[in-house]
Image (tube, rainbow, N blue to C red; front, side, top):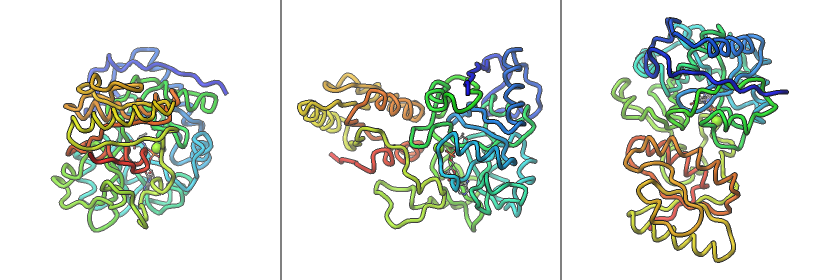
Length: 370
Ligand code: TXA
Ligand code: MG
């Protein structure tokens, strides 16, 4: 299968991020972008796959209510079919089409944080096929804020089931080039909306119990949710620095082997100068053994490292740049075939939890404290 990659110009839009403009259908798309969106919408209606940008990571989309289309997603990703998909919508009234017994608190957080990087778990209606929810009685729903994602959902006239558009076992894609690397020859179309803004997957909150439970940390933090919906629990399987033992993760995706680089990733935590000294020492040791070493630094520290292949993940003073750089840098060190990767850690409040959740998993929880 030939994979087409079509650029979508979003720069000319009157309003983008965070606006609900997309719900009105009044955007002024350049002709080529409109044609690409119409082609994409057509493919979705025919049960085919289209990769598209969201504000978090690129998604691999298909008609959420078409079981055969959902099956195609699993085949293209090489992913186990009991791992449920997130249903992407573009209007609040679509929630009641696919979910039932929706609690008041759930409406409050959807109204506050949508469109945006938050996925809400609710009880599902029968209309949602088992192929989309991996046989679960619940459904994951998200309204993305990215203008291309919103436009694709609207133009297709469907709700779109989409996991991250990586092959199983690879980091989530944060650019169309990443999607192409993983999905070339497997899907007909990639919509290229440029690099994503956030760079890590949406926060997942389960609203089917007595109080909200965070199943996956992300850009929307527990503190932000608590302001709207009262006390929030963070699933112990995703909190903390240690590898969870004997814990049943409630988001089924978390039980599968998560992305791990081909080389061994080791995180180093402590006061800045000690971290730099330790990473320099470890890198020198490995290089002396003839091994290829990568170092994940920040803009602030890049020049302090003397050995290995050095890359900056972003600015420590601006955690959003660190989140945005994470999957790109992990892919790069895979491509360079580094056997060891040493990284600074980022336990800062807020976005730090979401970044470290991904980093600790990628590192198999190897964390050196100095
Ligand atoms: O930011 C995102 O959420 C991206 C973009 C494309 O929207 N999507 C994404 O999808 O990260 P995926 O498939 O890579 O991760 C979805 C996670 C999985 O861990 C899955 O197990 C969990 O959501 N999930 C889906 N439905 C669920 C449900 N009904 N109950 C619990 N967890 C669920
Ligand atoms: Mg994923």
